[in-house]
Length: 395
Image (cartoon, rainbow, N blue to C red; front, side, top):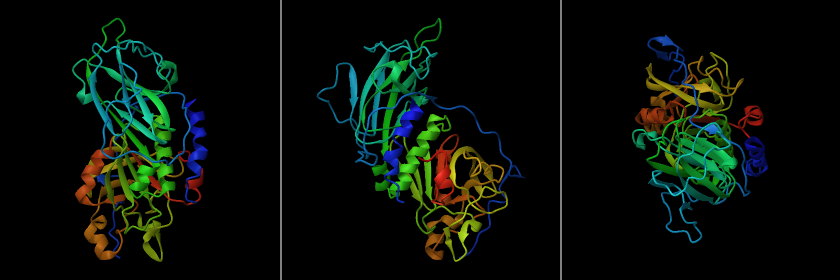
């Protein structure tokens, strides 16, 4: 049901789509002195895919965003239910002694015993967007095991997604339900206790307000949802690069979908052989081929960190065969790059091209690497007519 409903949103997304010194780098990236080597990416998803998606609405409607929290009492909120109407929203509670114990097994994970007490939330989503739910493990007490579930209706058979610490989905505007439910060990006690749950909503309107093109924004949300549903993202860190912009523009957005906020908006370099021969500030061609010195397009997963030739860096794993699945063997990584600093761009009028890596200002690179590593996603977008028409992660 999730995939069929995902396709239901296709039309809504499509209508938004708007039809120097070269510093050599990347090819000599090393880890412990070995070019191109890398540890195996950790497996496992932070959530379990669910089924179903309901409601209708117009993609790109007004998003609430901002820093507001829960807006106080809601007139029609049922007794014993927390009603969420604004985003981001953070709520701390406990399942110990919770008034509800009616949902025990969910359709998106029927073998998991959730027969302990739950706290119920009613969530009104004002515009189509990605709803991210995060229940930090670090804030659970010893022995506490609470899972988060996203439901179409207040019915365990309408589960859209669930996770030990995170759940989320691209939703049409409408009313949904969320539970923080207590896991019960077979033959053992309920692992109830206190927790903190955050709700973040990111819409196309939110992203365009941050400076993203509306078509790129719609593609970015669709791509993240597709990967999330497939278990290819471990958390809600997201980097979106618009390679249709010249490199003297800040064309990389680092987003926290958990809170719906912009973490960084910064310069990013492209590969030297991706450059327009008449103006190296523009990227115009891309490759998945070793030795091409070109950037790759598509959706990638942030993998492990390491210290290499350029400093503290992050390897990536391409998720799209034929377009970027060779980035690890090519040693295409995210690394610090003096050619992406404000001073360099202001003096040279562009970022200095790399050998295909995403080179970032050293002043923020460490923070970006830590934010996106171990399962965040990165989208490198460009309307090339090939990847942009055939990617499995685009509508």
